[in-house]
Image (cartoon, rainbow, N blue to C red):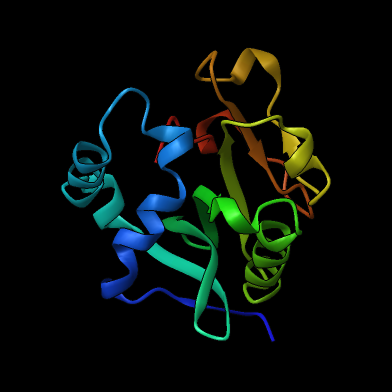
Length: 152
């Protein structure tokens, strides 16, 4: 059975490797892992994993932005388990486990993936970057411009 849980510190290298092909750019794996380990951004959040029989399938990091407002970042799936719905399942479980909370994320992939989960893009004029799309979960929440994160 697939289960969402907080990641253990001993699993961080495996988690970082899940995103190497997407965010490693032109770095060696060693340099990429070192950058992840020293990232203050990664140290400020809480890592989550979806696992099945002790096998890590997908992961992401959450950030407390303010009271009842969370950021979701670095969503990734181990390349051998991709396209099986694990990242969607993981995010649905996380959102369901946080009733009363609202969510932001920056989509580095086609935003349609997150639209299928109920997210919508912030208006074009309020997008802080050209290469990523700021999205939010609109259930009972319509953020004002001053609530929009510039990054997390």
